[in-house]
Length: 131
Image 1 (spheres, rainbow, N blue to C red):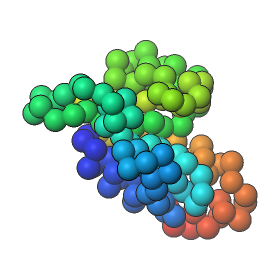
Image 2: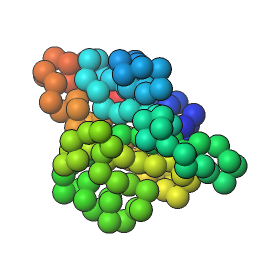
Image 3: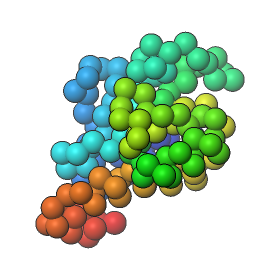
Image 4: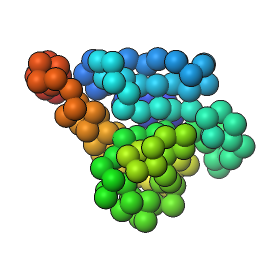
C-alpha cells in the first residue's frame, strides 16, 4: 500500500478529516476531533529511505492496543514503535511495500475503532450509523 491508497482508505472512514496542525509535511487524520492516524514522508518529512521506484517512503502512525502493538512489531519489521508518539499505544507503519494491503487496512480499522470507543455514546452512535 502506498501513501495515496492509505490516504484514500483513511478518508473513507466516517466523519474523518485531514488536517495539518504540525505543518504541511504531516497529514493528521481525525474522526470528529480525535486523531487516529498521521501520514508523512519518512521520519516526519526528514527520512531519506527510498522504495524500489526511488520515491521517498511514507510513514503512518496508528493507535494500537499495547499487547497487539508488540505482536505487530514482532511480525513485521516495517512496524516500529510510534515515531514521536507514545510508544506503548502507537505504532509507526513504514509503507515500503512489505506489509500486505489488507493487513494495513486492518491496522487502520483498529486505530479508528480504538479512538471511537473513547468518544461519547452520542458520537459513537453517529459514527456507527455510517459504518
